[in-house]
Length: 136
Image 1 (tube, rainbow, N blue to C red):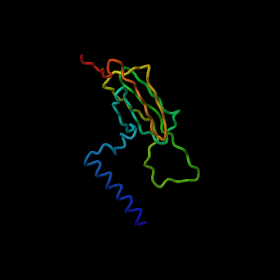
Image 2: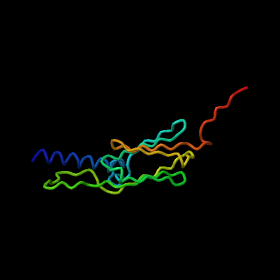
Image 3: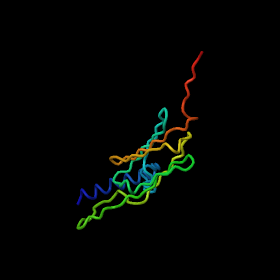
């Protein structure tokens, strides 16, 4: 019993700390926006989005103008005969919109989902690729 109270008090202290210092990374209202890393390669933009436990059938990727949008749903698996002591993972719809800073070729985009990471590679439009200029 003492352990449970101490354990819960630590989580309450963490929540209070997050509220006071506005660490929005832990704010529950932001859990529906997955984390991502964006890389600028020589001829493409690579976007990696963390989506653990999401089936690839539940993910929708769209490019509209220069905005990449990833939407989906985290579905909860019901466990029969099990009562939760604590449930921190949220199961809900999620969405992430990424405004790309360079023009991309809308006909040369690939997406791959492996081990909970969605990788979207968008080839840069020809006018955005570096052009080597020879000197005579």
